Image 1 (cartoon, rainbow, N blue to C red):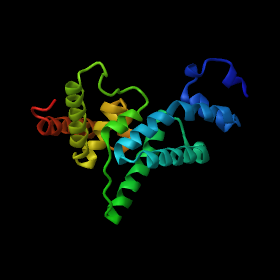
Image 2 (tube, one colour):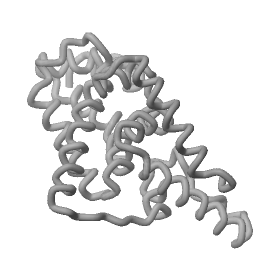
Image 3 (cartoon, one colour):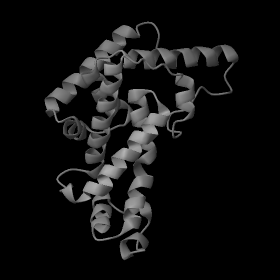
Length: 200
């Protein structure tokens, strides 16, 4: 292992420093990046395509592309922005491939939340069965409402409200202006309020 991998806690190593170390031959630096982002990336992709196994495959493909093309990363913006851009493009390609084949995928929201990384939990088991059922149904209605958003609004909303990227980062991921990002997130919220009136 190299000096950068041992000289400080993993959480204290900046993404850009890890990329630089990897380009100098430090394979462990790349492993740290994968560990840091793999769960977030899989969960993000799963929310877009609703196929956990495919989300895992696409996340792996995203990291392979980073591995092979790390020298193209110029450090003009955050590494996570570049990674999410790659993952988003892969998700779009997958959704369009499915549309061309006329395939429709259904999924269980409760199961998806169980596969999450723990940042968003299922209903508290201390609730009564009636309350737990009600909470689960609301989560399902929320997910269905998000899924029904036009793609341009859905991507912006998920990146902002679920992945918690900044407006500036989303602008770079989606390659649209800052004002357009804010407009799309705002429009998504308005549409969701209308779809979920009286539910949440």
